[in-house]
Image (tube, rainbow, N blue to C red; front, side):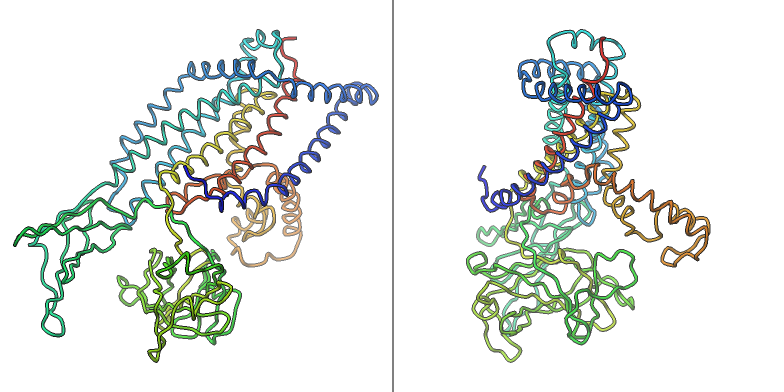
Length: 600
């Protein structure tokens, strides 16, 4: 495997600052925990004795953590693995195989984008099954051993509490990792076989195109046979070279074989469904209907403000400014991909797209050249190519890199809607330059790395909670943490008052009175009480949002399903985040087990 230094170097750029920030947070949390422990001991034994007990506990903790034995940790991890097998982990294998066996009945290969459908399904199914397994294994194991007194034979041996906790975490992690590898390989084969298909094409399926200017033949066109509920349009030029147009997010290579007067056609496997694009993003700005610069576009009435819109038939435009564009990286021109939202004020022909224009502008000289008019379809990835050689409106030739990319490698791409009373919408990430493609199998493995990181967080939290809670309580606490982490973004917005309708109490009142979420509540005792309750609730929600890990950010499923490469910097960043969270969780679990009376 070749490591891209461009992916690794940014990782080391942010690492020192992030490490210092993490150490400061750990020191603050450790100080708070020490003070709380001293207060609890002071209530029970008095302040002087509490100080001596707290100091003894801290010194013993440092000694235990430093003098852990790898051999004893490995032995305890092996015991956890055997215990997991006894708990019929093989059932997860059976459930997984059954799900995949019946999935072929419900997954439609004739959908708009079957690759995205299959990848989203296998990644989601694997994530749910593995997280549930990690949840049950990590939370029910240690309390069951304490209840059945099987842990007594362990703690009476020369084994440290830190080794017990770490052994549990590593043992359950080994079981989950083996399961994840099996699921990943099986899912990859399932996706490849489910999407594999081909078409047939014969001479009878083609008909001549209209003749050229001098009566010369202009080639052939037709359609392939149907497969997976679709077919492709075929165009063969006069030279005999043929191509298949894109359908359902993929295409096929067409090979023409000539043997005398006989011509046969061979269509290859599908291409373009399983991708790992490497995008280069620019900074988005807007021009209003008079051509003036705006930070945001228009709002067409949608509460989801992710995309902003521009008005068609005016000087309004969306402008992406790219940096570092060089002839070395794009010798033939700029490959552009975009996903455009369309807001129609009149229906028209709904099956046809809305015409738009693509232009290139030099930000230094201000020279702008129109590239082409194209037909935009809503939320369908449109592939455009800006060639090296362009022409102005009066026919003057322009070279892309000599005339339109400035000395700093900056260039602007302008997108406009041609039709009046229609609107184009986009966000910053909806248009990008496609620098190339990475390895899809490797990107698929990175997607499963995200599931593995989520699994490790669940195992760490489950083992930690199980050191001081009973099995069912530890299970529900870990499950609540997992649900809170999956809805972390919404919880943070709710805690910061960034959602419509106010906090929980105000939203509940609006539900009863059926008031609109955008209308201010009438001032009075009811409103003041609700806002006071919400202020207290939001304080605790902000605290929870700061403590609970954002499980959603550790999921790379959307990257893989939508065909975007997960950079090495991203994978390293989230791996470090997970490990940085697991280390204090492990220490907390050790301290809870050490202070608990077991086998005494």
